[in-house]
Image 1 (tube, rainbow, N blue to C red):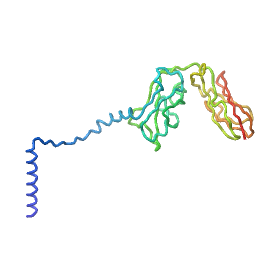
Image 2: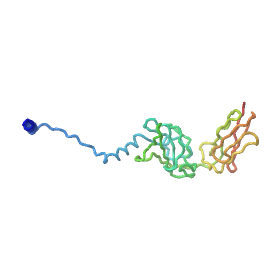
Image 3: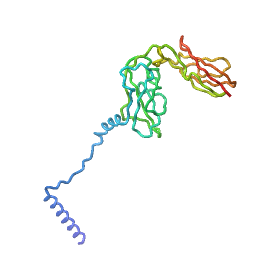
Image 4: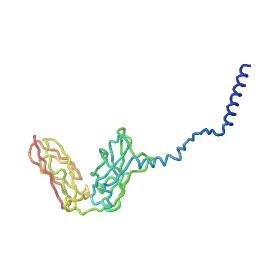
Length: 243
């Protein structure tokens, strides 16, 4: 009997509530809409790529004549520590420290998806944060920029650095680069055509072929020299070995 009374009372209260709502014609009760995440997810992801990442050439030049132009890189993603580059979006360079300006990636070296020739080119960049996450993620568009590159005529080669001081037994890395007339623009070199030499008994060079080599100083102090050869072109660098 008590349960029946309670049910009657509940029905009466509900009826009164519905009656009041129907009488208040000026009152609109907003019904929150549920966004369709499936419809908007792609657009949001596409928007993210323009907001959080950018890659370009300093000054936005129409023509590039230097194979290591200054790149302007930007991302708003937090805790980014590394970046790498590619000429095709598949073959990537090694990771390097993140910087908003960078001018040491060779866009025509024939490595990392680049081609050693003039023409229209596209450059890609990706990022890695402190936790090892790589950006852009799979669902996002690649970060890239396009430009036209005109390779200059090779005039000379140089070793960098040209002079260093090492203690006996220490090692140092050297790189050979090519330049045009007046050393205005860097010109790409084929690593397999570069040969490194040194005098006998004055340290070690490894490897002897390639764009880079490592020199290890001997146990005796003194001035040492190393050389790089590219066809008919040659250049040298000095190593001062001290105790």
